[in-house]
Amino acid sequence: MLKTKDAFRAIGVGSTTGFKLIARGDLEAVKLGGDRGATRITSESIRAYVDKLRGQGDAA
Image (cartoon, rainbow, N blue to C red; front, side, top):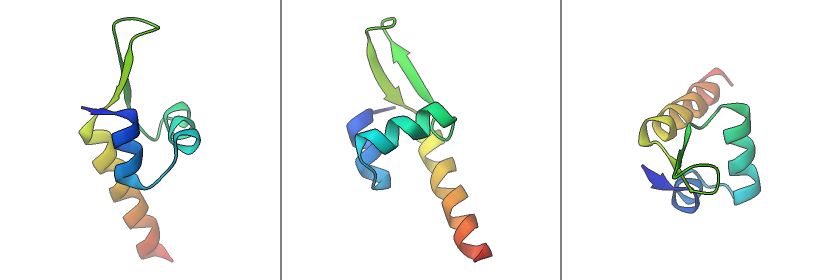
């Protein structure tokens, strides 16, 4: 799992867009330590998001 800032950097988005992706369900976030705990992004969801973007690029 990656810290949010590292995950967002990996896919080339800022924090506002990154958290919107989480809210939409495009990225899977895991809360560690309750509501005020750290948020982490799973590597699998990053791969799935990038694969989804690649698929959209192929369709264009």
